Length: 561
Image 1 (tube, rainbow, N blue to C red):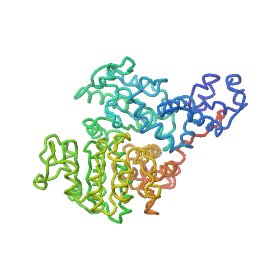
Image 2: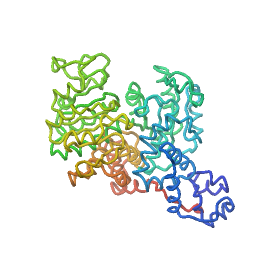
Image 3: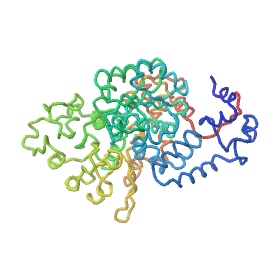
Image 4: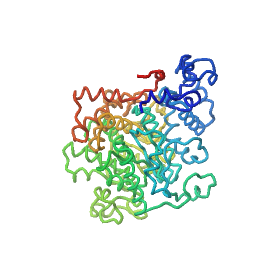
């Protein structure tokens, strides 16, 4: 069914309740006459700019961030163009509200603030009916799905069905930055229960009140879901989000060669971090392959970052073994050391030789971060642990005493789980640290100058990946495509033009940067043979990306051809 034919059938209130078609007070007099809208709207006809101004005033009247989050969600349910235009005009102010860190609070309060349905709830008791559930989706044509099971939401843990806030927020950014049409996105939560006792005992909790399904039963459920997606929505991009470490990597490994899919916590986080780190390395006038990297956090995100860093080092000329020896990775049980029980194959690739650390001080069950930093002349310190304050003053000062420009990335989120505060890192390093964080921090006033704090937000990559694979009609998402995204992001760094500038582009530049990243992703997809060649070559490919990108502007609803 062509969109304009669907519009012609809708009249009056039906039209006003379709967010992708609703123009509210911006409907022209002719449209109001043709579609039976006179009397349903105030007589004043507004421009989109006037609507944005009025919506922003209403937004400013909200008393706290959760209320602002709720307001934006309600606006999204009412008028898609106005919602995205408001976000675009106030992107630095509103992105933290519509997504991290405020989305964490939205997930915690999901059942209490629930207003209107959005997306699909695929609940375990209906495991035999998943194809039917997918056929109930709001729109037939879908380009991007973001799915979560709500078990590891940001740094706040198991939120059960409340994890739906993550796919909703994530897909808002696919549209805002990547230009994926809002009607062609589908948020999904796999409701397999929750082990959050507070949620289960809450009479307002809207999810399946059951302990989490695990093991073979869980993986069978995921298999049923993937099979249904491949059957009902073939060719869709399926992004996995906020799955527990024990499930995230196995799911990615199992399905990455079967359909168009990626895990943003593993691959998106790694690509953004790599892009920012490449910019930081440029400022130091050294190569990535010369760095000594200490990483706190060995979960799926941490190992994903390490894997992309290692792959880039190999491209610079190191062997796989030589590159792996540049890493010192620590988790809750201490430094990864060969022979330690419970290491995954991905973690084992970075485990150190026990003889190498013989005689090192052992605290609790293993060798901790402080001991590693005392022993290793680290040039990079990366945190993906969700352990607030883990980068202590003594650790950072020790690092700064050895390195002229220490690269320190506390990447955990939300904000309260950050391994360090940027103002402290600047103070402890005499302003020499190159810093990027996982959550948004305000600019820091340091010794008479303002220092902007870069946020390694995955929004720098995943919306562009969605645009690139959609435009190129890619069949797979490969690590090579994600590495191409990271390199392109690194090349967009203001620090390449001025070493004193930010490592990452400003949020206001994101839509333009996304075009370049999408183009690089699409080119790599064609090089790897997972996307068909396009007649007209690169010029046609870039044009296709630009044509595919949706922009929040009102169209002519009277158009019939």
